[in-house]
Amino acid sequence: MRKNKKESISRRNFIGKTLTATAGFTIVPSFAVSGLGHKAPSDKLNIVGVGIGGMGFSNLKQMETENIIGLCDVDWKYADRVFKHYPKAKKYKDFRKMYEEMGKSIDAVVVATADHTHAIVAANAITMGKHVYVQKPLTHTVYESRLLTNLAKKYKVATSMGNQGASGEGVNLTTEWLANNEIGGVSRVEAFTDRPIWPQGLPRPEAMTAPNTLDWDLFTGPAKMRPYNEIYTPWNWRGWWDYGTGALGDMACHILHPVFVGLDLGYPTQAQGSSTLLLSDSPPNAEKVTLTFPKRSPNKKMKMNLPETEVTWYDGGLQPDKPKGWPDGKNMNNSGGAVIFHGEKDTLVAGCYGKDPWLLSGRKPNAPKFRRRIDVSHEQDWIRACKENPANRVETASPFSEAGPFNEMVVMGVLAVRLQTLNKKLNWDGEKMAFTNINDSEKIKIVEKDNFKIHDGHPTFNKDYTDPVSAKAFAAELIKHDYRDGWKLPDMPK
Image 1 (cartoon, one colour):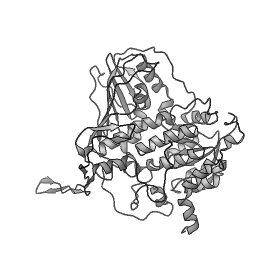
Image 2 (cartoon, rainbow, N blue to C red):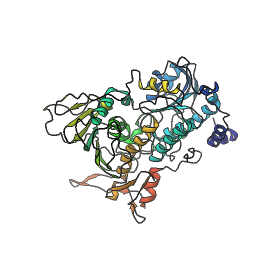
Image 3 (cartoon, rainbow, N blue to C red):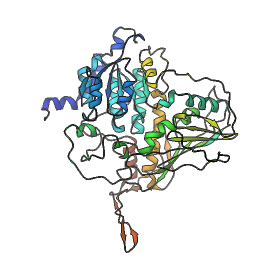
């Protein structure tokens, strides 16, 4: 059914209206109504989910101690089992309409949409005073990560990224062993994943008619409108730049988390990437990314040096060389990947999610335990934080104050791959969110199709390229997307 003009205008103007409303506190989360600024642990939160067909359902099932009052998904066929599981929850396709109609009764929002809409769904929830749990990767761009970090700080809401390994013992032990100088200073880290396990490295497919159960316009959201094809969604959107971040965005938030926190990394200063055939629309089948981080000063809990550190990532079946002394026959892949810390004194290895850390020497460290242990699920720990007063809240294991800067590291890897045709190390100014060595005269063009054929027994290519564009402008759009008309983020807090 075609929306009437009045309703369409309401959707387009939603952001501005809610920002004005929250400034005047006319939309107040129920946890603040009492004036206490928190809910008692025995009280239940009113939670809504946006993007519920996949991981969103898994997250919500971990939150059934609370009231699940609203469900939003653009694909009602994919979400049908979730609607049936929570029959009392109100159903929506457009999160903006849900926020308008249910805003006063919502305490917290779970965001598990495609990567490209994480930021806009979460940012507007935060400006309404709602706590947010956002699936990994936190956002699609560096700017969006910075925005969520700053908004969470301004509005003092409880936040968590859905990298559940952050709540596990493996990340705790890895961080504590590093801090206790068990392997010495670390100047080199290598990590990999066995993903992708969805289609990648493909040219853009032909147009198809979207099923009537899917609102393709709402799925596209702030991205450039493309013709629908069934390969995009559900789930396979990870393999398309418009909507996902490929294998790196999917798994680096799990595998590199102990690297970021254990080595106190901050912003990288350099990035470079290489890959199998780089296409304009789809991440490559396999890639390698190296990020360089400057020398840091250890914090009070660290007995180790923090020299300049190179972190190298592999995916698509690629793995780093096995370090000297690696046990014969031992598979490096542990639950989807692994990370290797090359220290001055020893080598530390952990699996995906920080699982099962061990030292190559065989020693069993007995380092002081200073990280908080979590004996509930990652989701339940966030619920606990939502109910606490911001003045004395114990942060979650992956709050946006940490997850935001960490996610900037992850999507920096995407930038390195997409800008690889500049054929140089890229210098990065983290504070300004800008590359400093891309000049005005540099152009970028990317393969759209390789048109591979066999001619007279020989392989031949007749590649179709995008039109050359300014490398500076291309990089700037990757750092901060130009949203489609009708979609707008809140302003960056000053």
